[in-house]
Amino acid sequence: MNRIGKCCLAAVAAAALFAPAGHAEQFTMHPHWNGSSIALTRLGDDTVGLPDGTLMQLTDGILIGLHGGVAVEDVLPRLAEIGIAGHRELPGPPGVLRLTVAAGVDPLAASEEIRAIAGVRWSHPDFRVTLHPTQYIPDDTFFDAQWHLHNTGLYTGSVEDADVDAPEAWDIVTGAGVIIAVFDTAIDISHEDLDCVAGYDFVDDDDDPSPELDEPDYPHGTAAAGVAAAVGDNALGVAGTAFGAQIMPVRLIGEGIDLSTVFWAFVWAVDNGADVLSNSWSLSANDCPTVPAYGSIWNAVEYAVTEGRGGLGTAVVFGSGNGACDIADDGVAANPDIVVVGASLDDDTLAAYSNFGEYVSVVTPSGPEFGGEHTKVRTTDVMGPDGYPAFRGNDNYTGTYWGTSSATPLAAGVIALMIEANPRMTHDQLKTMLEDTADKIDPGFGAYDSDGVSYYYGHGRVNAHAAVTAAYNRAPLQPTLLEPLGEVDYTGATTFDFTGTDPDGDDLAFNLYLYDTGSTDLLATREGVLPPVEIDVPPGEGYTWQVAGVDLWGEGPYSEVGTFTVLGGEEEEVEEADEAPDEAFPSRTPRQDPRAAAARSSAEGQAHGSATVRATIR
Image 1 (spheres, one colour):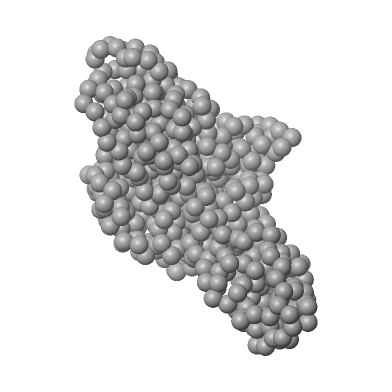
Image 2: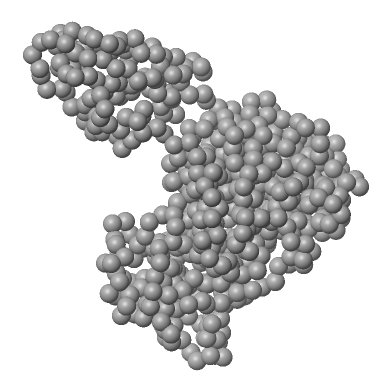
């Protein structure tokens, strides 16, 4: 396949005045979220280059992020002095803005000045970038069995159990109710073996993320989606890793789009209910990327892992890439919140192309680059005769998928299984448990350190069964309130009695919340208690209360609301709570369903404006 061509790619501010157009001169830029720097070359008025040879094109925009509590008005006077003619706040996390420079103002130099303003968290130009696929498909086919899910050692070069133990995990969960957003070239939403929710095309800025057959690598996204969540147990085609999950198709790889659009794509997917974000692409045209840690990308990831899934965090997964090199200079992979995935083969050795280094979290099984004894991955292809080579004469499937492009959605699917196994897990818990349960394959070459981490394999090869088993936990059952209900006499201490159990047999404690009827202000709370609980409740017009069971993973469902009044006696001041929780009374401020935003109109995305970035497939 033809590589998506080098177009302009993202960069950031330089630390000096620049040479006239046509001069090639080295500068140091300081775009990084973590404070590190990368050298770039000024090639002309609107073009710069990264050390890996990637070209980048300037626009009239600069992206900035403000520290919490800093208002736009606080920095506007200084921005005006630097030459900023306008600004608009981007959707999503507060304090992220796109600035427009005045005519004749160099956005590179202006961005560097802005970065030094008190209250500015990060700053870099809104470069026009090309996202690049991180894997390219050869025109050959291999064995059809889905050995990456269940390897019996049947095929030449394969080793039994060099897989992710998916069938064992499926005995417990299949990913039902989980949404995986696949950011890629496009996805065939009409495919017979894919279950898709509403998606978006950020390249053409419309709500149809279907493939365009004249685009390079147009089948890539459909293949990635199938690895993650092709429908299983339907007597048809292939099974995805999380075959009970749904796919949110997001077209992000195509002709140039701005970094602000990449930022908005992440926010849009999170706000529309994505539980996992699968990214088989890079910001570099080079398989050994030297990519800045763009503040806008880091801010988008931060938004996902803190605001997604109702505040539990949406998992963000990226492929390590296919250059057989250390990714020490990949500013995206450097983000500790991202699950970075390398590739192993069907004999539990490192794929020759798989990038490695300290940023790699785990590896998952994938195919080889070209030929050889090892098998590639069987997955979905665009429907009909177009796309990749057909699998066993069926044009709707292919047996030629490989690279970290395949390894990434495989890991995303395992995370989806973990979320169904325990929907109360946070992003941090999911990432840590995925790593902690990985198998330490190839220990000789892997040379795992005392913490169980390898320079080549990260924490090891993902084991879906181990991860799901470790994560699996059902929430405590809804407690039943016994007393007080109705009218009770004041005796100095009201006894609150209730019952509750846990379906897993976990030891339970309970949280109790007491309110005035009609109010969301806590009068009293008791956390981590067992029934009965005594609270001095004075005579009053009426009170309401609720209880939730608590296990190691947090609260379960809240009980029904109990209502009572206290009669007689002298009125005393009720014991106050230590602190009222933000969500106050759960019955009046219900916890949000993480997919409630999925019904929002895609008009928000349409209002974002024209899309102008392209990417590289991993």
